[in-house]
Length: 72
Image (cartoon, rainbow, N blue to C red; front, side, top):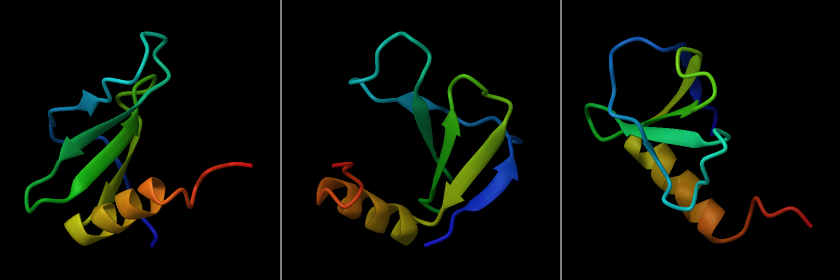
């Protein structure tokens, strides 16, 4: 899975996890038309945006829940 990288463009409704603190080091997610998702760094809201199709994002979340990205 390789995400698309785009500059920020159309206004999106960005949401950060309730687990995030107030230190500004957050990844925020927005729902795209068609059900995909966009991710960006809250410290750089006008910076690049990673976009995923609905299927790609679902696979990413399943992998994260399964611990595939855990660092040991």
